Image (cartoon, rainbow, N blue to C red; front, side):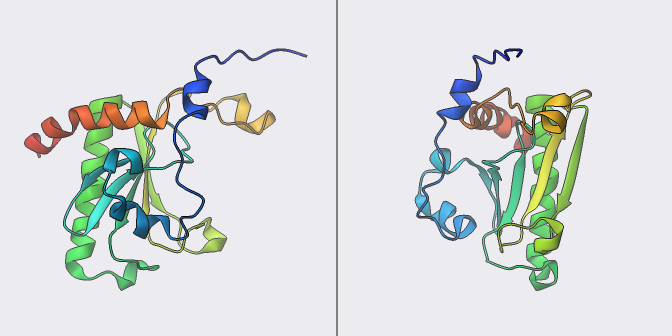
Length: 166
């Protein structure tokens, strides 16, 4: 058997997670009053950006409307516009802070499409050339090189300059 030494993983493993008592995390997170603890990176009028606690890659953000809706069609015009503006901000923020080679942006609408939380949210996932390797395919394991806390700090540090440039 070969050994995989990933000493940096302990920082990720020990990073805080949402309390198990949260039944509606996308509604409850903004009410916590501590954006750092909730991993909320930015708030706009109708939408907020939060780090995904089960990310595909470091920096995986979710754009979430404050109002609890399930379908895109349920959003009002100003919420549509605000959601798209937050997605664009997320892309700019990831580009400035993490320098990805590309970005995946999308929605999982309905349980058959992979939607696991019945509250509309968009995924903004930074991608790097070679970021997918044998681990997810053979080992059924995703290796994340950065903790959520470190990612939040990194994104928050560049947020003011990204907002100023917008």
